[in-house]
Length: 133
Image (cartoon, rainbow, N blue to C red; front, side, top):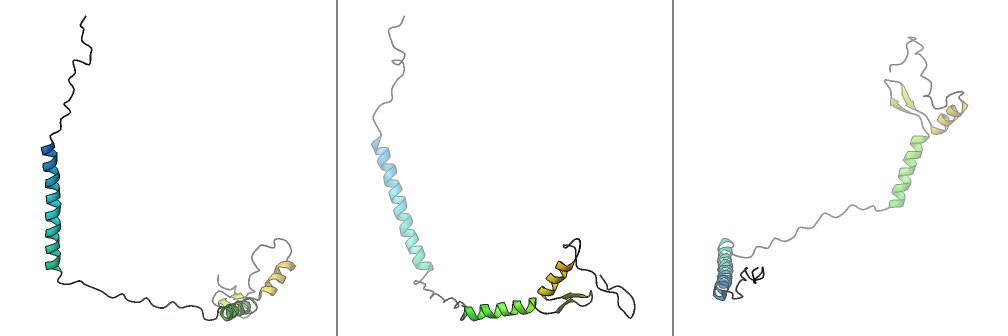
C-alpha cells in the first residue's frame, strides 16, 4: 500500500500572482478610457461649435368646460326632447321614433309575447302595398 494520500499526488497552484501583468492590464484600461474621453471631447467640440438650446414650445391650452352644470342641463334637455317627441328614423323604410311613454303603453297593452317587435306598419292606403323592409 502506498503511504501517500490521494491529495498529495495533486499539485496545488502557487499562491503567487503575477502582479506586473495585473497592473499592466489595469493601467492599459485606464489609459484607453482616458484617451477615449479626450478624443470624444475634441470630436464633440468640432462637430458642435456651440451648445444648442432649443426653447421649449408651450402646449396648447386645454379646452375645459366653462359651465359644466349648464352643459349638463342642455344635454339632459336634448335627451328628454328626443325621448318625448316623434321623429323619422328611416323615412324610406317607414321607421319612426315615438315618445317613450307611448311605446311603454303599447307594450303594456299587448297580449302574449310582450318582447316581440312592435307590429308592422299598415299597408299604404293608395297602393295597398306593404312598406319596404
